[in-house]
Length: 150
DNA sequence: GCCAACGTTGGC
DNA sequence: GCCAACGTTGGC
Image (cartoon, rainbow, N blue to C red; front, top):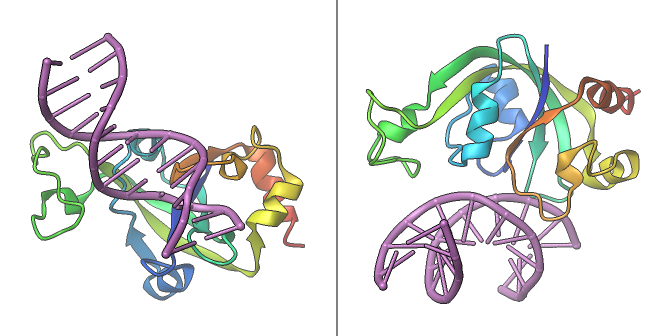
């Protein structure tokens, strides 16, 4: 079982939205490195939900991968802002996963706290200038993040 | 294959 | 709203 961190702007889709929906398809990722991480996810993996572009940016909850290797449906939808004209159902470019709500943390773990707790090598989200929206989290680091809650 | 121009991300 | 970092595009 692997751990991941996935970013979303709460004004677009928040942990509260996921708590309400229970499941969602994590669509709209259009970065190849992030997509490659999405492709390597397996059912049962867990992912931290990170709120970006908010004050403060923070890890706000936990989710579980419930379906792996789905074609992102928005790539085929001309009305979607994520539409990709070079992608066809026969040769889709963008894959993603379905995630299941696990929990919203009682208190968010802010980027400041993450910086105090981890080096950029341990946790990529504390790297200055980091823009990757999907990234792996080592199991030992994941355990320490969960320990910060208690 | 290089690289300048351009667009996006995301913390502040 | 600013702007640094960084990814993508497209002309050559």
